[in-house]
Length: 499
Ligand code: MN
Image 1 (cartoon, rainbow, N blue to C red):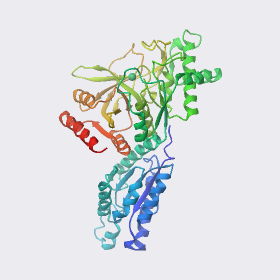
Image 2: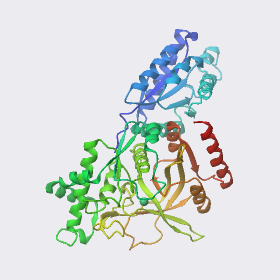
Image 3: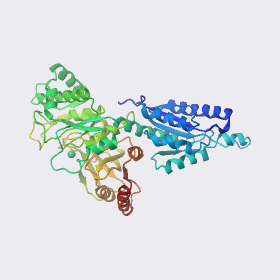
Image 4: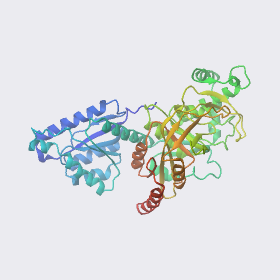
C-alpha cells in the first residue's frame, strides 16, 4: 500500500486587517480547529496542515511560494472566513503551481437566531467572502475544485477526501519515471502518443530500456530468492498441479519467479513507478511476464502491456489515488461481448496481466500456452472479480491534447463458470446502457486498454484531469448520445482556441 499520510494539504484561510485584532484571532482559532478536525478525520488519507491566516498580498504570495517548493505539499485548501479582497490574491494565484480546493464553508453551521448581531455577521461572512475569491479564480481561468457545505458534514469531508486523493495521484506523477521495455506493439495506434508533451503536461517521463538490460538483471536472481518467492506463491495462491515441485512445469514456475525478482530489482534500482513491455520484444526472456506483472501491479506499480506507457502511468496514478480504500485498480482491456439483449455484458481481461487487487477470492496460479509471442508458456494468476460499481479510464492522445475518458460501469458476478478461460476476468455493464456506452467510448476515441477501478469514481478522475489541465469526458448514467457528440465537437473547438 502506498502511504498517503506523508502528503500534506495546506489549509490557508484568507482575511484582511480591516476587522481588528480580536476578529483575526477568532479567524485563526476557527481555521486551526477546522484543519485539525480534517487532519484527524479517518476519512482523510493525507495530512492537513494549518497555515496562519493570510491578510496581505505578500503573505499570500509567500505561502504559495512555500507551497510550490515544498516536496510534501500536494495542494491548498483555501477558505475565506471573512472578506479577503481578491486583488490581494492575484500575485499569489499567478505563481501557484499546486492544485487548489476552494472550501466554501462556515465555522457556524446554524444562524444563531436569537443571538446574531453585527459582530457575528462580520466574523462569519464566507457567504460573500468566498464569492469574491471565486471571482478572481474564474477571472484568471484557474481550474479548481469547489466544495460547499458545513465542514463537519460527512458528505463535505468525503468530497475533500476525494480531492485529496486526486491531488496525491497528481503529486506522485511529478518527476515520476516509467520504463518502457522495447517499443510499441507494431502498427498499433491508440497506445502511441507524444512522450515529450506528456512530460510537459503530466510531469512524468517515459524512457526506453532494451529488454536485454532487463534480462541481465533477471539472470542475476539467486536460487534462494526464487525459493523464497515460490514459497510466497504457495501461501497466497492455489498452485495448479503442473506447476508443483516434481511436476512437468515446475521449472516454468521458477522461471516466472526469476522474472518477477528481476523486474522488481530493475524497477527499484531505477526508481521507476511502473513499466510496460511487449510480447514482440522478449529477446532473452523465457516467458512473457504474467504473474510478475500481476504482482508488481498489486504492489503499487503502474503497468500496461504492448508498450502502452499512457495506461501504465494512469494505472500507477489510480493506485495512488485509491490507496487504502477497499477494492483495487488494474490494467484492463475490453475483450469480448455478450450481446444477449436481455443481459448485455462486456468481458474484460488481458492475455495475462490483470492485477490481483481486484480478485474475488484466492487466485489460482496456472500455466497455459499463449497463442502469440513465440515464447514458452507463461505462468499467470487466474481469478474472477467481484460485483459492484466500477469505472474504466483511458487517456488518449488526440494530437493537440490529451483526453481522459471515463466510463461508469457496474460489474456483475460471473453468470457461468469459465473452465477453459485461462486468464483473470471481469464482467461488467457499461452505463448508461450497452449501446450508448460503447458507441460513446468509440466516438470519443477511447482505447481498448484502460485502468479498471473498483474504488475510484468519475469525480476523482475529473479532479485529476483538472489538475493536469487536460480534457475530461464522462460516459455515465446521464449520457445522452446526441449531447455527447456535440460535447466532443465543442471540446475540439475549445481546445483549438485555448492552446
Ligand atoms: Mn492489449
